Image (tube, rainbow, N blue to C red):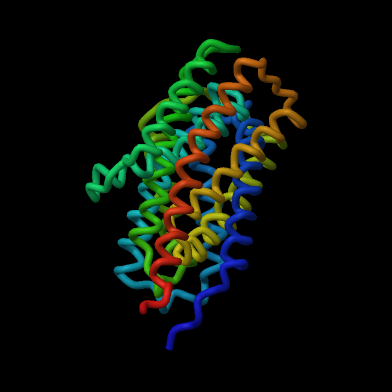
Length: 302
């Protein structure tokens, strides 16, 4: 006997909550990276998240199957690459710019769908790509220019798109999200820890600020948010989920402005606005298309 799916209000409410905590992760990651090397930050964060998830899912081991292991590992690989590029991007740029550039994942989703499933990219997505190109050009001409951190944040956006599509395509309604999340976090922890052993890093000290940042990032945007994503994104479309996730840069911009005192000049603000618009326009267009199809499907036939 399967349980009834959650209501749309519950699904969207929890997904919006995840964007708030993910937006906060930009701020806390930036604080933590002031003393901790990026790969080490990811390793410690996900080791802690894995230990927490072990405790949370201790009574669910009877549901651990090969399917859970395979699906969790697949999603974990995508999450690992996403988080490694995420921290490296934030290390080299402001959280305001990183948040906006990460939002480009919206444009990468239809491109990936074209490459993997041969879907049409569509005119509206090409318009979005053009707007994003203009926005990146404006960012490149203002402030610090388009630096390595900005490039890595853009690559991270591509990885975010892969992760979102992986969650939508790989996870099944019957999967135990707690066990899937446990495997997912463990895979990222192994990936980052292996890189720590391969790539030498300078000596560092875990300051109180770094410890607090790692604890926040392990609990809220990791254990809580990815479990919520695994649990609720399955009950909506990738388009609707993507539209909700565009809130991430809003929170990172606010955190950068209010807490870190980050300031963008007029050219950079305009560039960020163009990139945000580039992500929003295709999403809204696809959402209207989905509604039109649903209306047509439910329309009475004569």
